[in-house]
Length: 140
Ligand SMILES: [Zn+2]
Image (tube, rainbow, N blue to C red; front, side):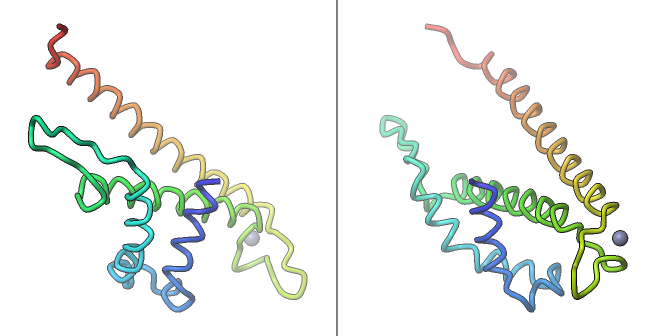
């Protein structure tokens, strides 16, 4: 699953310490993700237009930000899903049994749903942009 793979890659890049101060360490996180981004970028066949002297491969930012954005989306979905699954709660989920907090199962699920809706809105906007640009393509 892409979500599990991306979530694991980003979690390992964060490490334990950085999880506590994740915003402070965000630049370091992105730096640590570079190998995974390059690995994914290399799996995308290059977009080559030799007649036009244009090429996009794993070394180009069009491809690297593509891979980074999908990786971070997988992380977000995986993180929210896992917190929903365990009912992550700092008030009611206590040692030793660590029973899920039912309210936080639901709250994290709602966060996951909201994230999905944001992604769907973005996809809808991308499709609209594609349709706008189609008018620039001549139909031979
Ligand atoms: Zn709770």
